Length: 294
Picture 1 (cartoon, helix red, strand yellow):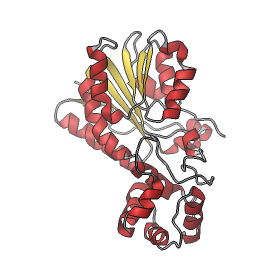
Picture 2 (picture 1 turned 90 degrees about the horizontal axis):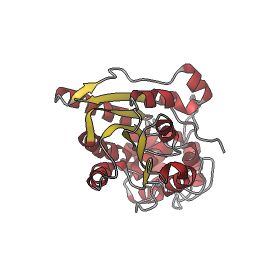
Picture 3 (picture 1 turned 30 degrees about the vertical axis):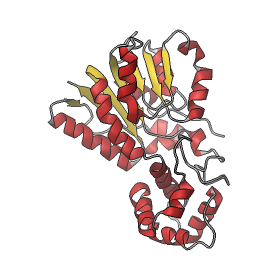
Picture 4 (picture 1 turned 180 degrees about the horizontal axis):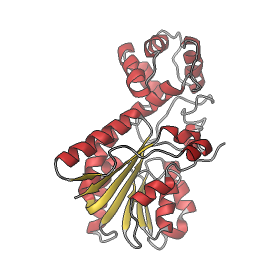
């Protein structure tokens, strides 16, 4: 299995303007790449992740930072960031929040995990929940929603050009689609001739993952809360990998600037260098944006 490589590591942490002893939030802990960089620069971190495997990994690998109180790991979605930080501040566990980082990508380990349904190379159950406390799995969406909704989901969240054909094939399948291999095989059978280097199932799997985990809705909920808990002159840094994610961030930052809440420091997003893309092809779609609170 390929190990996860943190995208835009230097650019994102530099954008936070980290100062020793100040508190920062890593809203999407993952494998802890950004958190480690913040800690190395002398910052203190509250890190969020709703994937229990990410939290278990963090508790083990970062024990030397957790024990003295330099890192607080929280298993929760960043859509609940405000009440959690407010509670920590009331208890005097953390001080002012000087910067907040959102990396909306998924880790390589998650995407390659055969037993969670993220990988179109495996034959695991079609689950796709980042948080196993969520009720609806990907296979449930395929079974329960109408063909028109499936078509819209694959098209809008995945950019899938053959969305209608695939949606119809799923609904007309003589047996329920419950594993990643079943879905992958169905997509391959129903796709036209491939001109792209992407695997034929990439866009449908992406759309299902986004839908199951309500990823766009979480961004819409999390960003306003982040601005509210951020100290004056603090910065919010986002890294998006999907057009829908980046559009939501761009629209939000523009609105905040119009409302005189601060300054959008990235009229055009920061993107990976050619060297980074060469070393980590998954970084090619990344777009980083920065907002400074007034």
